[in-house]
Image 1 (cartoon, rainbow, N blue to C red):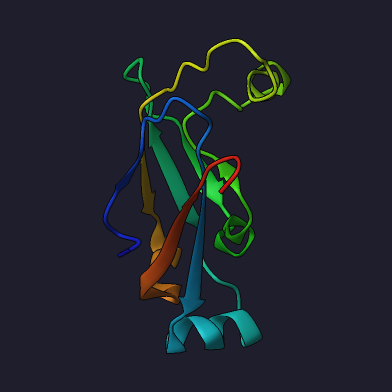
Image 2: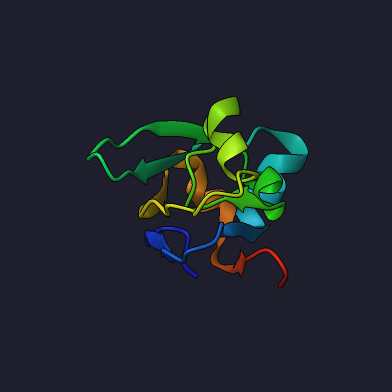
Length: 116
């Protein structure tokens, strides 16, 4: 996946997690070692038309991130453990910010589902 192109998390009837692994570009490697990597942001296009933007640490996104569930708080996280039927939320993720150039133009994107 190209980090400058948005991706949409699949709307499955079970929780979906995603993880992204991005290598540093040559310039990003120098920035990481000697300077500071500029800010990278993530913007989510939610089902209600809201588009919250957050500062992102791409090195942390190589662990599973809840994708189609409202896990922004403790109550949302509880929906992942709730035995009632799961209601997926459509979600599109955009990466941006001046620090995006510190990462390779190709990243590995993987979707994970329970039991996979």
